[in-house]
Image 1: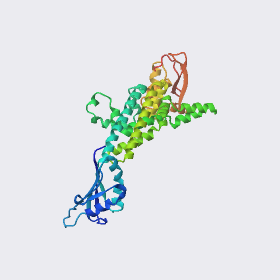
Image 2: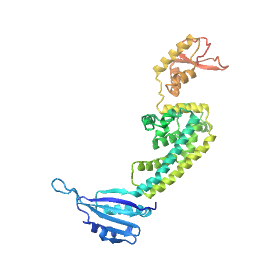
Image 3: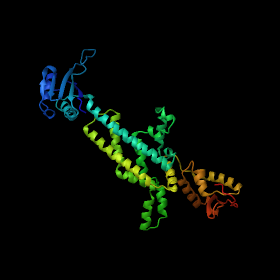
Image 4: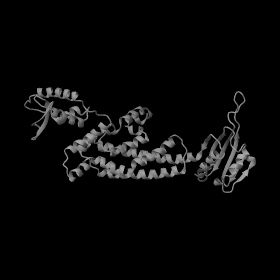
Length: 404
């Protein structure tokens, strides 16, 4: 940042209200702004103030006239401040404030800000590095822990829809690799991480657990521990407890300023550097802890289902649909000498399109109403009894084979 940079304003005196009514008058007024100068001298022939390696030039802009020879505005000036980054960065705001408040110019426009350009160019590589560090971590972690179908299980539907529309943006590697995560926005990518620690149990889940809970301290402690799987605890401890969401959103604010070519201050640069270091530490530490994470098969299945439910991929089944499905499968299985096992019916027959949690709740409700019957039968594949269901008043057949 040792090169000379320029900050240029277009100051419009729309109604000719500014105290300085010509270039030289404005130049002398700016010379009196002691807050931005150390040892200034005026070069009247070049309409310029010089102060060491810093200079300020004023050029009047003549307004065009309309069809009836009336000017479009009173007066306007281009005011260019030039010097080193460290000097110009701190002078921009007081210069702008003086022109607006004391000289009564309005409107004011930033025509050129090479200081903001330098800050943005220094911030962008940090944003690029941290975004792709998280992207790589997310791909590796999710694929290993949840399997190749992790995107469908974890990506919110609206994000998945957006990514599908962006597929045409990647014409080369998109033909060979699964590039869904490379088509997600910065904010969407962060949300896919911090949403994993928010828990997936629904209110009905918790109510159902509390109903059968003994009123003891130990039981309550166990329930609190059970409300999150090892997977969710990992994301909570590795990301949520480290303030990841807040830091990512702060970094997203800077990312959006870069994307929209906004104006920057040196505080933005320092903030971006600090956020980069903090986020990089969080992601790398989470990656290190991944090797000790153990997710049971039951936790993985529950997680996959609850994520699908919360993302809208699985819907609760209606009573009529449940009874129609049960009647159809019951007729088929009994014709073959079998029965409808609860687990197979809910998980394998209904589970592809309906929430298994709500299907279990439907079994409880219909059984209480007497519309279906839950009963025990010998399991031909095990020495233990297994639970089966049927429409009420249906006669059980001798189970020979469970088609499950």
